[in-house]
Amino acid sequence: MAGNSKPRGAVRGSKKGPSSGSGGNNKRRLEGKGPTPKAEDRPYHAAAKRKKAVGKNDGKRTGTSSPRAGTAPRASASPRGRSEKPKGEIVSGRNAVLEALRENVPATELIVARSIDVDDRVAESLKLALHHGLNIREVHRAEIENINANSQGIILAIKPYQYSSFQEIAEQANHPMMIIALDGVTDPRNLGAIVRSASAFGAAGVVMTERRAAAMTAAAWKSSAGAAARLRVAQVTNLARTIEDAQKLGCFVVGLDGEADVTLSEMKVAKEHLMIVVGSEGKGLSRLVREKCDLVVSIPIMASTESLNASVATSIAMFWVDEQRRKK
Image 1: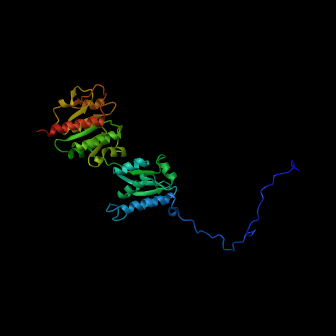
Image 2: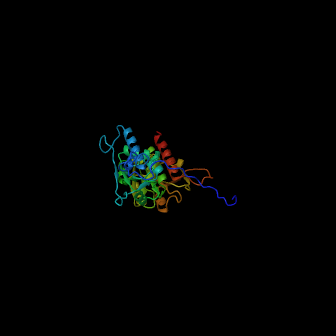
Image 3: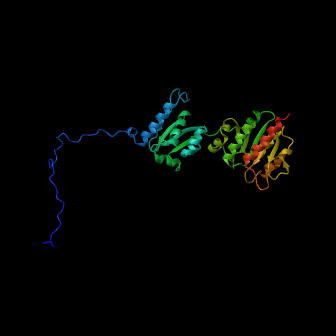
C-alpha cells in the first residue's frame, strides 16, 4: 500500500575482485619502505633546515679566522641532563644575540636548541658565530629554557670583561692626561656611550665604582661600538680615595653638576692634567665626591630642560677640553 511503503535503501553493487585477502602473494602485495631516516635527512624537519643553513653559510666563508686553519668549529651536541650552564653573562633572544654578534661582543659559545626554527636571524647568527670561531652547542629545548625561559631557543655566552686598574690608566696616559670618573652611573648604555666618547676625545680611561654602578655588560659593549676593546676601564672600591690618588699625580679634579655656579666655558684649567667626575642620572654627584673635587662646573641649558643625560654631559665636557687643548 502507498501508506505502508518504505523508501528503498542504497543498493550495493557487486564487488569486483576477490572477497578475501590474498595473503600477500599477488603482485600488489605491500612492500616495506626501509628504516626511518634520521631527522637531519628529512627535508621538512627542523634539524634538516638547521643543517642546511649551517652548511650553506659554511660554504660561503672564505679566508676567515677559526681556531684551526681552514676548519670551522663543530656544533657539539649535549646529552639530556648533562648541559652545563654558561659562566658569566648571557645574551638571549634572536634579535639580541644577532646584534651582539654583529657588534663583535667577546663571547665564548653560542647555545642553540635542537628544535629551533631556523629563520634569517638564526641563520645569520650561526654564520657570524662560525666567522668569529665560536663553539656552537646544541641542547634540548628544556635545557635552554632552564638557562633562560625567554631565550627563543638561542643564547650567547659572553666573556667576562678584563678590567684595568687606576694605576695602569695613569701610567699609559698621554700628557696632559684626561681621565673620566663615574660616580654611580647605573645605566650600562650610558656607560658604553661614555666609553665611546672618551676614546674619541683622547681620554686615558674610565674609572667607576664596583658597587651600585653599571658594569661592562653586553649592553655596554654594544653602546661602546667597539671602543671598550681599545680603552682601559677600571673598577675601584672607593672613588673618593681614587680622586685623592689622582690629585697626588697632579690631576685637577673637575666635577659636573647642573647646579654649579661656574660654567664649563669659565674653566681655566683645561690644559692641565684633568679628572672629570660625572654623577648619576638622578642624584648627581654624591656629597663626599663633590667635596673632594677641586672645581664643580655646570653646562648651561634651557630652563625648560631639567638636566642632561650623563653620557651627553660627559661628551660635551670632553669636547670642550679637547678644543681648548688644540688651541696654541
